[in-house]
Image 1 (cartoon, rainbow, N blue to C red):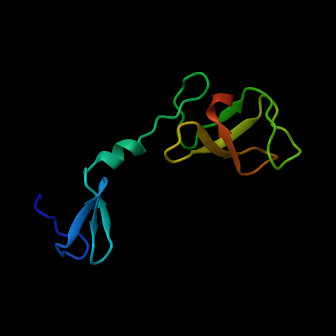
Image 2: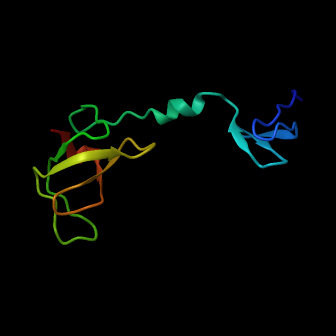
Length: 114
């Protein structure tokens, strides 16, 4: 058995390891056991259909006509989506708004960077 760590929140030493996290049995606080392993997962690389890197705030263009669930208005080829937001932990989807439809979640394989 290894030496137990003290909880960073309540400073008590009644802790145990649960998978990739340490857990304090007294206050219930959890923290990662591997240090900066979680920050490496946060840095997902999002690319459009041509392989260009996408970032928050970019402008993209739809490359083919798409049916939109919950709407009778389709997204036509060439529709511009401005000020996109990247979905955390998902390299295949972005969020954005077109002129006619708000709150879109689109797959990056149907987009190209403008």
